[in-house]
Image (tube, rainbow, N blue to C red):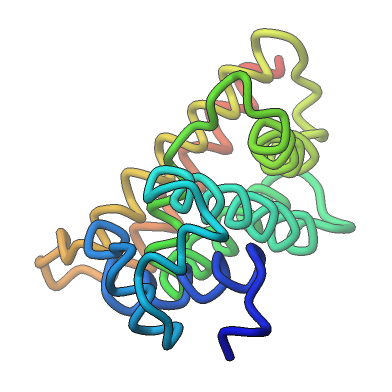
Length: 187
């Protein structure tokens, strides 16, 4: 395995490992063991743990963008918003560390990281086309959706909902609430 390693393979394996153990638990030592190499060998592919997490975040943004774009293709309005919301929630549940990495904003000087984050933002913007928002309104709408969904997803992933009420039912009401706000902003 070590002779087949490259940066992309190391980052992919790191993301898989982090999804199992948690992003905060990911270390160069643990990754080296998982790869079957001495930990210093990992540094041939990544500069340090921050670089590794940034690469995971970049890949996560691209993966999430593809998932969100596919989810809302051919849909508009509440249907597109709901599809994006459900797709993000489902994606995060299956990839918790990648989702956590997605919350790390790229350094403004990181052209690749910024482009990957832009792909995800573009997927949200595409889902909101029917609301006819632009400029600051569109920026605010995307921020509202991302922060609302992130709050719900983070609480759900962290076992923050203990009451017997269905989280699925609540999630639908969250989407309805977002749709109502965006519809009002559009008018």
